[in-house]
Amino acid sequence: MSKKDKPLLEICLIYVIIGISGLIAYILLPLENKLWKFLIADLVMTVVAYAFSVYKKNSSVYDAYWSVIPFYFLLMWWINSHDSWSLAEYITALSISFWSWRLTHNWYRSWTGWEHEDWRYVNFRNQFGKHFEWVNFSAIHLYPTLIVFLSMTGLFFLYNGTAKEFNTWILSGNIIAFSGTLFEFFADNVLYKNRNNPNRVKGTCIRIGLWKYTRNPNYLGEILFWIGMALIGFGADAPIWTGLGAVGMTLMFLFASIPMKEKQLRKTRIDFDKYKAEVSMLIPLPPKL
Image (cartoon, rainbow, N blue to C red):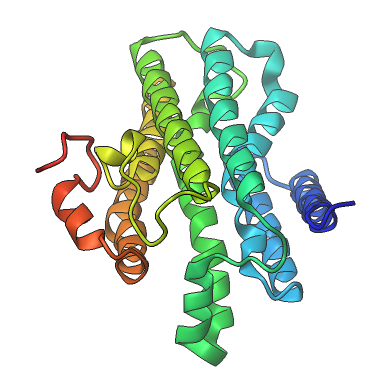
């Protein structure tokens, strides 16, 4: 057994327990509204994930939750209503699965074991000290759960047990979501290979592949995926408020995730200011010379 195998088995067992806790909560909840049942089950799983992060003294227990839970929901929708699925449901399921498994695989290959904790969480520990656990639960666990759930609410109108027509909204949403996942796929592959390249120039920014045209191609892909999910929901007659999740995602990446990452890069990359001046923040554009 390699150094990574034991912690990997542990994290897999943790996620099995998390999934079972959500399933039990869903079954036992005396509610007719599936949206509320899914939300409460989601919150139960988040609390269990938080408990394990406290036990392991590592908030990166939650890292895989972002990508695993949408696929978990998809399995629940399959169990509840797959007899009525039409082309629209199957194509959307393919888009969700591609995004979920690609992102989960990227987490897996980048995760080195319990000695690793996301640098953002480490910064929070140092910044908030004895108040960290409140930040740990509310910002690291609860908020991502809620924003992902809100971003998926439109899909509840697609997977509600009634076959949906494969219309322009659903087609466009799937194309945008699939394209966003491809952006992430190519960007993360370049990032992973660069990090593991012994000949790379350490302390410098990546300027190959998509990283030559945008400083945040993986975040762009994530934004596109969630916009696509919102459009699919609209194609299934979801109300306009279900699009708030995609808006919230976009704002979170633009005003929280990207600034936080680039603040860190300024500390760790000697050429970041030059890279920032020459390469677009989000939309791929030819680099300025």
